[in-house]
Length: 186
Image 1 (cartoon, one colour):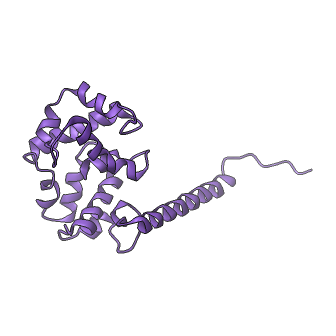
Image 2 (image 1 turned 90 degrees about the vertical axis):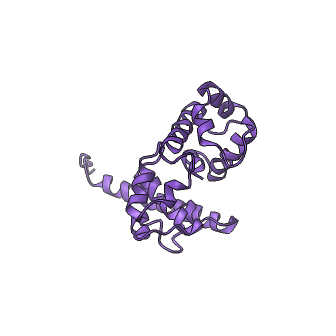
């Protein structure tokens, strides 16, 4: 799940979350993926697996490095057990901070991940909804945290398109009255 979230940028969500399974197949790994093994793997081997056609990600070398860095942290700080990232947190804020400290997770992606484990796995330390806001809101359909089937995927995509169009419209409206020279009247 962590690897899928790391890969979930600039590619379709289905491709991102298919990435870990593809990596398992290409490298002949066991499931669950051994973080120690990925962390100690020759980086060139990992890049080759990510780059093989069709590539796992549109930026195979950088994502291979990011997944390896993530695996190093999981191996070193969480004993190789990725679930300890979220199961050991005493509250939602600590959980979000743990996730933000991982490679490939900024503030927004960390909030989405907290919402994902809360909604999909039932990992709900005190304050998880606030720490994941607005993604933790019930029925928000803002992110992968709400996707459970094709219909919910379609709804998340629809709402994202609407939000993007609204932001673009607001940006255009704001730019319309600022920073431009007045038009000449004829």
